[in-house]
Length: 118
Image (cartoon, rainbow, N blue to C red):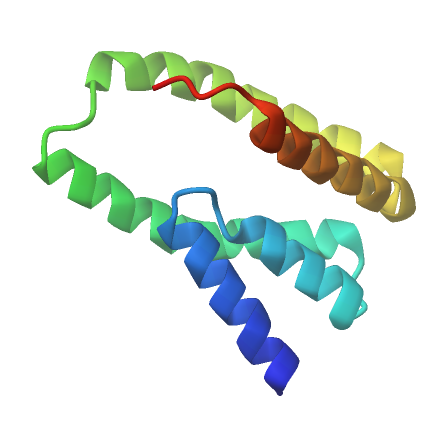
């Protein structure tokens, strides 16, 4: 029970900071709940949908979305997501988990050692 609370807390903090809590959710589902990587990523995407819809509504009302740019992101993102799902089916869950771990490690190190851009 305490592990669930800690995972939810860390995921919420990461999400509130804008760095995404999905990574923590995937780690929790794969490592603690013994779920395979592909299922954990699918559940993460399902949890992202309502959050993304709420963010879209909030940013639309505050006029922070450049709708002409959205078209280009959708045109690249949808085929990219479908290609990613197709490739993930061939990779297998064991390798998918290792690739995800390396990606998290790379992004974490990049964040630590990146020069401040502000």
